[in-house]
Each structure stands twice: as C-alpha cells, then as structure tokens.
Length: 506
Image (cartoon, rainbow, N blue to C red; front, top):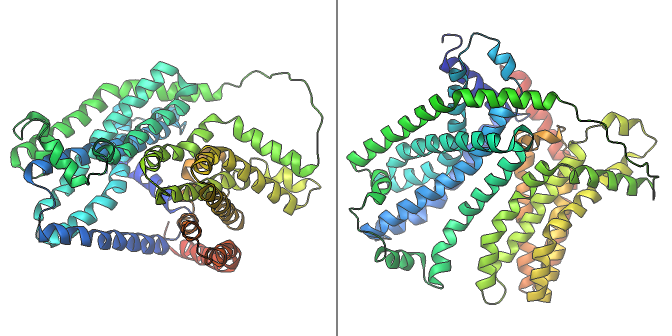
C-alpha cells in the first residue's frame, strides 16, 4: 500500500476500530462469542423461513410495501448510530492537526474515515440481516441473497447522511455543543427507528401485521410507481438494482468531495475549542454536610448532572420506551411489555455504575484518602442506583396507577436488576475515562454480555410475580447471588483472556 493513500489510511482506521472492539477480550473469546451469536440468529430465522416456504407470507404488492418499510427501518437505525460515530471519528479524536502536518490530502483523510464509518455500520446490520438471508436462501428463496448487495448500499447512504448531518450540526451550533446535540438528534432518529414497527399496530388496532399490509396495499400507489424503486432493487430486479448501486456509490463520492474541506475545518476548530480553558468561576464556598458516604454520593450525582452529553448518551435508552408505552397504553390488562422496564433498569444500573466506579477521574486521590474502600464503593453504587431511580420513576408511577401489584413487581425486580448490573460493574471493573463511555462495551465483551443477560434474566421473576407464582422469590435470590458466585470464575476468565492476548501477535 502506498503511504498516504486511501487504502493505507483505511487500514489504520480499521486497526483502531478492531483494537477498540477487542479491548481486553482475547481473540478466541471474541470469535467464540461471534460464532455463538450468529448461530442463535440463524436458528431464530428457521421458523420464519419454514413458514414462508410452506406458503408465502405476503403477496407481490405487499412485498413492495414490506421491503420499503424494512429499507427505511434499517436506514434510520444506521443513521442513528452513524451520526454519533461521525462526530466521534471526525471531531472527537483531536488528531487532525497531526494528520494534516503529514503529506496527506484532506480529502483522502475524510474518505478513509467515511469508509470506516460505513464498514462499522455494515458490520452491525449485516450480523442480523445476512443470517436471515442465508436461511431463506437455503429454504429455496435465493432472492433473499440480495441482502449482500443491499446492506452495503444502505451503509454508504447512512454514512453520507451521517457526515452531512454532523457537518450541519457543527455549523449551526459550533464546536462546543456539537457532541450533545448530535447525541440528541441521534436519539430522535432512534425514536423514529423504534416507532416504525409499531405503525401498523397503531393504525390498524388489533389487526395482524399481514392484514395491515393488505389494507395498505389498497391505499398506496400501484407497483409501477417510482417510489417502489428501492424495494424493486432489493427484490433483485436488474435495472433498479444496478441503478441503486450506482446511485449509492455516486452519492457517497459526492458527499466526500463536497464536505471534505468543511469537515477538516470543523475538526480543526473542534481541536482548538477543546484547548481553550474556561475562566475560573468564583463560587461561594460551602461546608460539608453529612458523613463521608453522603459527601461521596453528592459528589457522584453532581458529576453526573454537570455532564449533559453523558446523561444524554445513557438515557437515550429511554427513547425505546415510547413505542413500548404506546403498546402498554392500548393493551388491556397487564401487558408483558411492562417487563422491559426491568431490563432497562438493569442496563441503566450497569451504565451508571460504570461511570461512578470505573470512570473515576481521580482514583489515586480517593485511594490516598482516609476512607475505607468499602465505603467508597457503597457510596458510588448508591449514587448509581439513585440515578437509575430518577430515570425510571415515570414508568414506575404509570405502572402503579394502572395496577398496584404491577407497580410493586416492577419496583422490586427493577431494583434487583439495577443492583445486579451495578454489582457486575463493581466486581469486574474496566477502568476508563467518562468521555469514553460509548466504548465501555468494547473493553470486555464477556463481562458486558453477562451484564446484558442478567438484566434480561430479571424479567423472569417479574413474570412469575405477575402470575402469582411463589417461585419468584427463590429465582430472585439466585439472581442476586450470581454476581458474587461468578466472581472467582470471572477472574479466571479475565486471566485466561490476558494470557491469550499476551501470546497472540499484536
């Protein structure tokens, strides 16, 4: 590879991305986790492919509507992720001055980073869609293999839209507010992404999705309309498919050509804005109130409150409660969708605990203070749980108003899930900077996977409580004890990962 060329820089970008993904996880463990996940997705696609082989689930006209909806759905999800990635890659590294000091063309830098963004978006979406395409093709539907061409095109479109949105937000709001507002905008796009699957249910009430598609087929333009060109391309028609591929490549090239200079200028301006030190604010001194744990709790809550970007990043998960809330509002009786509040509480507990425990900016200062380590950890965990309670207070209140037993179930199981997630962060810490919260899941894939599984497992005692089963109590006690029981096993796994990393080539 020629130094300074697009492939040369792209190799560097992909190497940085791979290091961030691998983190402290050994390649063997990461490969095993990837194989296990892909196997589960392939197995999940088998029943749907079998039903489609027995009798087509939708007709030709309904297929165009379904494919168009899936394309828009995938594009929204990619843009939501790509916008944050564009802000981080282009503006968040602060290395643009160093790169521009080398004999590298600015357009080459932006092209390499844009391709890296598109590659990351493709890897996330392909891990879900391509296994379904493989299974459907094995059941005698080779047209589904068009996903191997459609998904790269959507990734290029999403990368182009993400770079354009990031540049527009930067020019409209300046370097200091770009990260926060980009996160908010990405959250709103994610909200539209989460609402799309609920549109047929909201419009048609109790009708099944296939009945809703049949009704929509009589209201939309005919199959010869130009609005179905993306769907016809995804269906494998040669003309629309070739035109779609060329259009995506052309738009991606035009985006790089048109925005390269502007994105470089924005990145340099962002680096200069970070180097400016704000003026010292003189505030009235206040004495310490309460004991050491209370002071530490207030300190953690204050640090959380003064970082709006971090709060927006963590609580963006709440946006996915909106479509769930619509389903729960329209459902009669106790909808199982309420159990997702428990899963959300567990995820938030792990996230806030990572910020307070692993994201500590002054660990040496706390270590030198005359404070017991147990008191420090307890105060940090309590601060994380208080933050979780503030976030989930609204859905808990809505559940309690609908049904008292439902509210109590969500309160107890949500508290257990949040505590389990926090304990996993405490027992298996992965130190890092608070600013790198978006990369916390890349440091140790095994621990993060266990945290996600624990959050989902707490929905089981919640379901048992809603059905009045006495098995809810022993199941909850087992889940509470799992983090401590697996502490020794987790340490052995981490030592095995470290040994595999040391033995593997860099």
